[in-house]
Image (tube, rainbow, N blue to C red; front, side, top):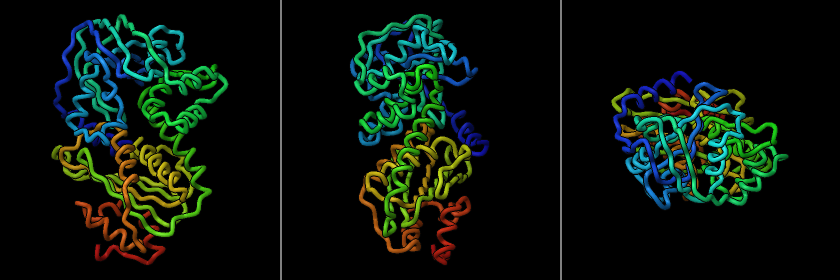
Length: 385
C-alpha cells in the first residue's frame, strides 16, 4: 500500500499535538481499552490503555458513540490523547502471562475498569495512524493492577467455548448486538477461537479481521436477496469528510474511491479499489478502510433485505486528520441510516452526486472500474456532469 500509505504517513508525521501529562505512576481507569502492537511479531508489545480520569470513561474508546454524539474532530483527538499506553513484550501465544490475562479481562468488560500502573519512566509522545485510533503517551509497564471486572455476558460465553471458531464467535456476538469495538478488542486479546488456536492479534490486524469476517457473513446473506429496483443516493458529512453512497439496481459490485483535497497543504490525490460479484481476494490498495466501508454497506443491505451494487465516494478536506478506519465505518453507517434520494437512471444519480462534490466527478472516474462499467452498459457519458 505504498501510494495511500505513504501519503497518510506524510500527513501524520507533521502533526503537532499535546498529549496528557502523567508521571511514572498512574491511578485511573481503562475505558476499557487495550492495544496490541505488531512490531517484532510474533513477539509484540501489549498493554492496557489508561486515563488518569476516574469513573465512567467509556466514551474515550467507543467510536460508535462519537458521530451520533456530535463529537468534533478536536474532541475525539483529545479523548484519544488522554489515553496512556503501557507496553510489555510477549509472544502471541503466551496467553498464560499475567498481564495478558488482565488485558483479556479488560477486553471482556462491560464498563470502565479501575486501574493502577507503574511505568519504567514517564510516558511520552503520541501516535496517529490511518488504521487505528490515535493514542497518547506510552512507556514500558512494570506493574499493573485492576479492580473488579464484570464481563459482557455474550462475550463471556464465547470466551469459555473453546470449541467455537473465532470467526463464528465474531458473527455470533454481532448478531447478539455486541458493538464492533467491543468484539474487536476481545478478538485482539485472543479471547475467542478454538482453544489450541488462540493467540494475540495486533490491533491493526484485528480491526481488519473483524470488518472482513462480518462483511463476508453479510455478503453470503445478501446474495440471496432480490436486487433494488432503483438508484438510491445517501449523503453524510462529519469530521471534515463528505460521503456519498450510490446503491445501484444490479447484482453485488462494490467500489470505494476517496479523495484527499489539499489536506495539510498536500496536492489533491485520489485512491480507489473495487470488486465485482465476488469478494476481493488480494489485500486492497486503499487499506483496511475498504473492509470497514464494505461491512457498513452490506449491513445496510441486510437490513433492507436487498442486493445491490454500491459505489462510495469520500472527500476529505483541508483540516482532516487520520483517526483510524472507524471514521469510514461509522460515517458510512450514519449515511446509510438516513433517508436516500431516489433516481430512475444512473445519469440522474451521478448528476446529483456531481453537484454535491467539490472535485469534478471525472477525478473519481479516473480511479473507477465499477462506475465506468455501469456507464458503458447504459451508454451514458460524463459530458454534462
